[in-house]
Length: 190
Image (cartoon, rainbow, N blue to C red):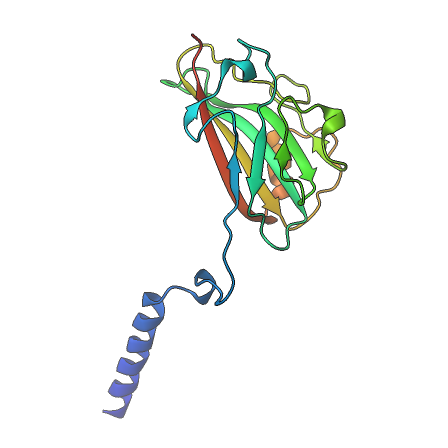
């Protein structure tokens, strides 16, 4: 009987352990838990990106703001891409519009039409799919596309990667992401 009770006791402990959320998922008492957010005063999440920020307009970068950067963040990465290329009904690739890395963690956003000279000290640029650095706005050939503005908080400052592609940047970021947030905008040529 003794062995049977021990097995039941262990089974009950396992059930109890799997039933409770992990301690790390419970907020610290007396401390507010912040969640990283990314916004733009130019468009809402899942809203239409104004043509000013596209190839139909001035093709300038939209203003962006963020908050809730987690403790321990050493740098930020911004990736803007379109998973609906070339046609949302039959997507074949993800088109990269903008890559920035080693953004200082105390940066709270970028103004509209931010130029390379205006980027915070230390910020580095990667290559978009036009094979150049900088922002390239939405320019969908057909249909309504989604544009993902993704902000990553990293626990490290990345080495100088030169002008990396998205895949090279993601490889360097691997195992260093503390938190990620995204803002999605849409655009269709009129």
